[in-house]
Length: 90
Image (cartoon, helix red, strand yellow):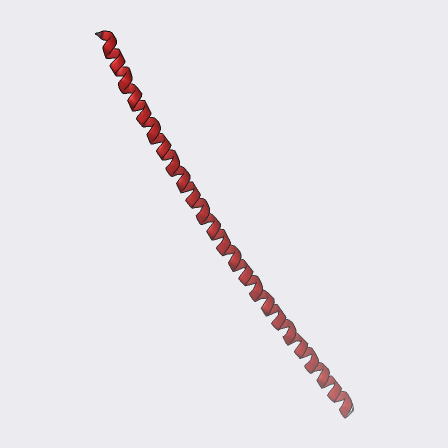
């Protein structure tokens, strides 16, 4: 083996090591980007869940208000019916 063959092999090894490091770096960058995207997706899901929860609370509040209004109307009608009954008995 001549000196130039040895030098060429060493250069090829260094070249393949450099390429391996470059691939490792690219993989690390892609993994970091993927993690960032996953984190953003999780945050968006949390925000959507909060919005849905707030909407459900508002809907329940509206239904409670409607129920109270209907109950008030029933109570008024009961009073009027009792008054009509008492007038008919007289």
